[in-house]
Length: 198
Image (tube, rainbow, N blue to C red; front, top):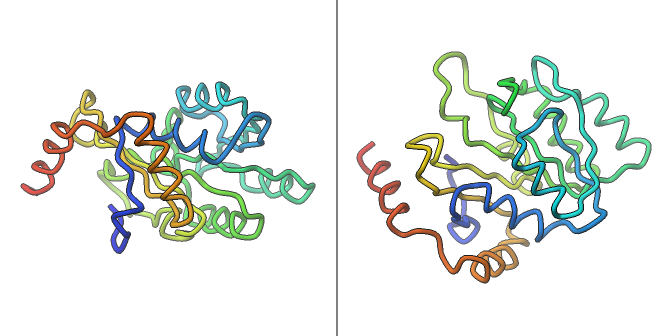
């Protein structure tokens, strides 16, 4: 999906949910504030609760999260460690975040120094309309991009990846290696062959 990314910043896992769990534990801890869309993916919400995060949810509109409410929270002093977002064909709502809202969120992440975790397993499943730049494209130094081939190839294929910022790659890769040693080489080979064939 992403060009010009150093391979050392790409961490593979058994689907993106496992990587979400790792990222949550690496960059946040009990009591840390995180922002989410409301509603959001229930499994990710379970991970955040298990990690002891404090969660603030922001309602969705037809063009994505209500950014005015996010900005109000930030202006009054709330500082999340990260904002978990599914901007393309959001699960469970199906909404697609507008370019204007993506740009505004990228600017806020830069200004207020929080991470954005962009969960993007559905982006390549667009069948009509125009593709919108990812949050990662807009703020690569503040956005942690994750995706999964489970949605693109087949549901049982547990191969996911996360692109982490340079300053986090050592910490995340060590945590991943200590957790699962490596992700399935057979499943990775299936993905590689699928992509190689075009």
